[in-house]
Length: 365
Image (cartoon, rainbow, N blue to C red; front, side, top):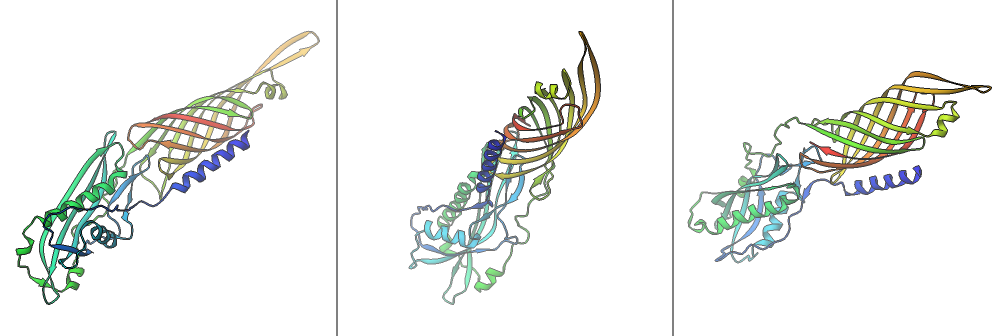
């Protein structure tokens, strides 16, 4: 049975890992309907001072901020988007768009999240000498509140991209008489005061309270535990601490084979672990618990027809590694479900080792 359980958990890990991927936004093709269109989009220039990402998203149950980017880079992604969205009629006036600022972001508000997209752009048209002049600038932003806003960043980004192009189309850009400069000068401009650097992470503490059922080769039972973890991470790993108590029924045959009539173990556990997000809302937790407590043993003594009982109490300790997979909701307050394997090694007269499956459920806050 344990081998079958191990195989199932291994397949779960492989499947969940397969879905883990870098956070990349792929813009969908969509048409922008405009009246009296007099231009087409020749290209998009990334004029930001910080060009390695377009903001951040909250990843995992502990809302760690991670960078996000556009597939293919900003210039290619936005040029391709506008080439499809705006009628590419080269008989019209060519327009170059310079992005001054672009950011997608998330923040939490109780059990909900707020997703935001912000964009500031400049529009340039050419003269007969092949130089370019700025004829319009505008900005747009949009926000949405939802339990999980990460999946909506692409939609919000398309909304602000549409908003700025409509503002340009409805402006008096055709009558503006700008100062014309070389194209290389436009490309060389960088908005160093406006960037998409991540703001410092606010340190938070997440608590998980759980109940679990355990099915081992030498004992079965249930337990309660508390697990707490800080938002401070090292790489992609978080490091929770835990306290727990168990109530198990030891296999009677195991007790008798060790020469005792009854055995009762009372102990608590403290632990330290390492947790990693492996895809979607799935996490892997490796935890090491240290059980400490006492065992109460009763030995039956029979001499002839006389029966006596000897009671002894021993201090017990041990080590308990666990390997678990969890599904956790992303909201600040939610639930989680888990399953995993445990191994126990005790300094005990009767319960020296065990291997089993643990099923868990609890609340996150």
